[in-house]
Length: 308
Figure 1 (cartoon, rainbow, N blue to C red):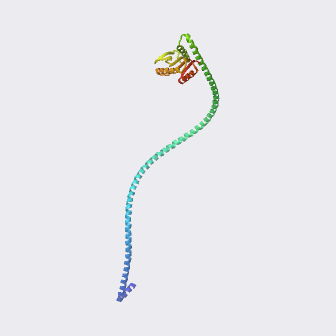
Figure 2: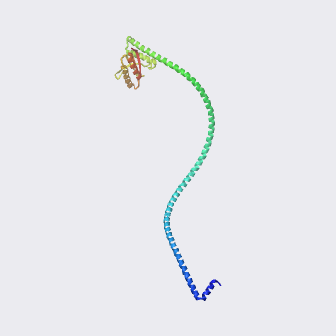
């Protein structure tokens, strides 16, 4: 028999004991229930606090959830943008792939061209070496030419000295011829008195022969006097254009100025610049210097018979 069966048997035998046991059991049950109730109240309070915290957390979660929804929306937009960008990148990538393929082909061609250039460079190197040999020969030849040039320079310098001497002699000869011509003009002018010719006619004739001898005036041309726009010109030729002034004695530069004026008239009439000649039979030293200066400045050929 078990312990529980024995306890039941004893309680059936003693009602008083059973009543006491009942009260003990009831008292213990009430204490247990009270204790349990206190525990439940404590747990309930804890649950209320926990629920309160959960409610707060839930509110916070709701806010966070709203933020997450907004963030998710933003992420969706960014994702769409990234998707479009990825699409463009894919297109660019495909374009780059095509271009890369073209570059590969181009690189292949460049390699072929490079090989050709390499062969050409090799040939150029050989040609360069040959040129260096030829250059060395040219340097030697140049050295020889330099020696010959130096010899020629010495000969040339000697020739320059001889030419300089010839120029000096020619200048002296030219001055002597000019002096002789001027003296001849002076002497023949005196003879014109006995030939029945005016000074202008006689001088014009002498100048004509002189210019023909110098090749300035063609053999079929002649000098004459001419009046153009009321200007009396002592010596004139239309082709070649020549204008001249003759005077027995020049006491100032007036005769040169008159010649320049007449030359301007002839220039306007013929449309070209005439050769200018001023023939003075006699003048003094100072006037001669002044007239000579004007003649040099205006390209006048001055012929003076005698300077006193």
